Picture 1 (cartoon, rainbow over the protein chains, first blue to last red):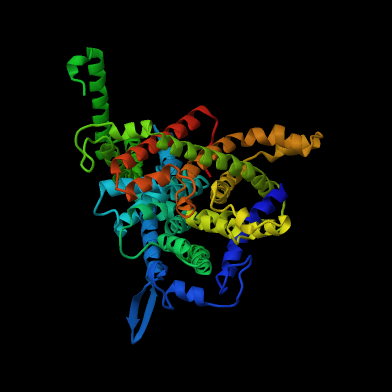
Picture 2: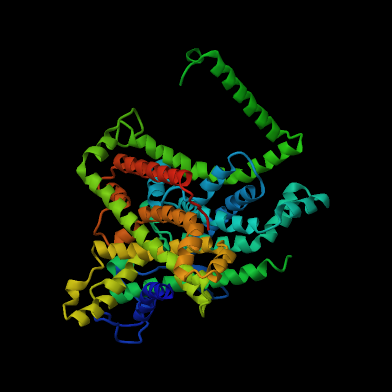
Length: 275
Length: 313
């Protein structure tokens, strides 16, 4: 059993490590990459060095200018971060209440509500086709992408928040707050939700990462303009040299790791100051 | 729709009764008087945002897709025609595509869940050093999209892939002949790369609920580890395994990005994208989307209804 575990971990992780190492090599035509250490691949992917055609790298957008100092960020990165955050925002609005309904109350059809909210309705490709047909003008825009992401990733939010709710003494919390004079909406917003923060934060992290990495839906509906990150990755994997594709993929690894750590930190500190 | 005259009176009054009941429910929600009514109103309010998103982003677009798939004209939803479905049924090409989808998703599901059982067992039952790290490493690929999984397989099994070259050195053959990344087996491995971590996540949840006392009792009564697993642990995790099979199979059918990078086997999702990119045949694409939706809905519903499957994390 342990051997299987170790073999599978190696199968999953060896290519990740090799890709990361390879992204700093100038050549990777043999078995192992060679010509260390160069940052050229990273520079080209991030748009710091000139590149052309389908291997084109990221553009840069000015984030803000302050007293002559201009802070710019790669536009594809910023775009995807924003889209994924928008998706998470909608997920919070729709996911937390329904998770509470399923965890707290018993009502006719609650099994169905539960199943529908935690099972992914359709895969990204199908939803993409549906969006193209139903909202031809809206589907390729940022708003269309955000709405699509939020529907695709909602089950993960509901699951994370629901399991948190299920571990809480909901009825007791609600009744104490009500007996102290709080209205029901107030109880829900100021007692129940803050108490479930760890589940909500982990749900938000999962949804964010999955939305930032979304490819299938984006591929079908995206038409023009700044590309979501996953499409940018695909362009590099299909068109660029192996080392450069490795740099693009490694950059993505870094983002996933960094955001996960960051959101965990914010989640455990930011909310605590209130309670 | 049937007119009232078609029905015997009994049905009509029952219909009337349920309309009244519905009206009563609406009244209760808008102007609750009892605590029970207030609770109902809360449940409706809590479910409303999700329902709105589901209707706007899910149900309406899917209905539109279904509408165009039975339209008599290609780009406008008018009339009724089953032309697109006829194409799907009669053209042997689509049968091959459907067959490809089923065996690829089915095979990788069996392999992934088969591997996930010992992994989850090892993670949950043994006190391994660095267990948290192992859990993180196994879970990491869940957030990788299919295109990245495909790239990982190119790194391992491509022309200058690591495994390819190790095998080439061992057997003395040319790496070019051994590279299987861009082939059906390579695709199979790439699917597993995405699906093993997901199956493991589901089964770890199942294992967390296993009754340890019963296992310890079996052990102390002299059962071997295998006997304990076979007769005590397995019956407890079986619903979880069935649930994992259903969910992983759904994941396998939905994979698309991997196929964009490794285009060797045409499956249902890839074909839908091709219908749109070559000639924008929205009708056939819509029909394929409808068939996909009905198929996954049907087998999930039947799977959950007629097996002891438990779905959840």
